[in-house]
Image (cartoon, rainbow, N blue to C red; front, side):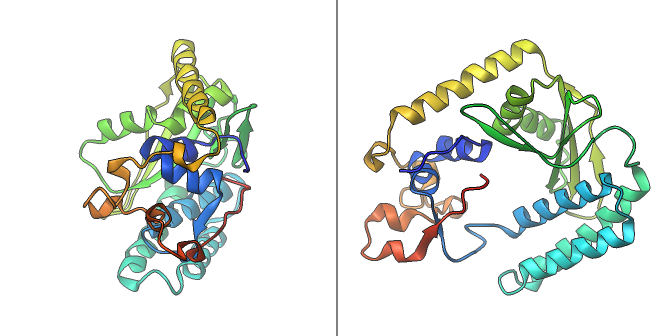
Length: 266
């Protein structure tokens, strides 16, 4: 059974549902069909936006960058995202691009270089970027506007993703950036949130304990339980529908709906 270094996505998956973690990260299976349940259009938009910000900091001009962003969005949503979901995000992506070039300078030192892979012997992460000092992590998020922005920032700053990045980079802080998906469109860039050495030590201990727990379960699928809140077999909340439930249920031929995952990322 293939084992890889743990990413923030893998750790979060395990905390939500150990059984889902097994199917996705131990058996390396993913659903063949792309649907809103398995890979959301919101997640795709966020990934393409991060790539556009990356091009901004590489010096790509606004016209070229916007054209590339919208071309990628149209091509990658064709055939599976309905217009009622695609069109509002098309407007948002276009607006974000104009706002970004108006507000920010690619030479401002907030972000130096493109996406960066960081890792140690057990964990791996993919940063949106680091500042010119190499000690401040820059992370972009696309999200719905929230009046509780302070609470949203706090949740992100204490997320598994940020903890992992801090441990892997020994960062002194993180700068979060939010692109609002609803009108009026806007970009909100936070001040740097400091990260202390004590926080890094605590987070490293937490992550190591999780990794040890995962290793202790071995490769036997019976050791990985279904968490009630992460499985549609136990939970009636539609948002919790798990694409792997057919495998857990033991339905004959369920494996036909899955394929081997590409294991280069997440």
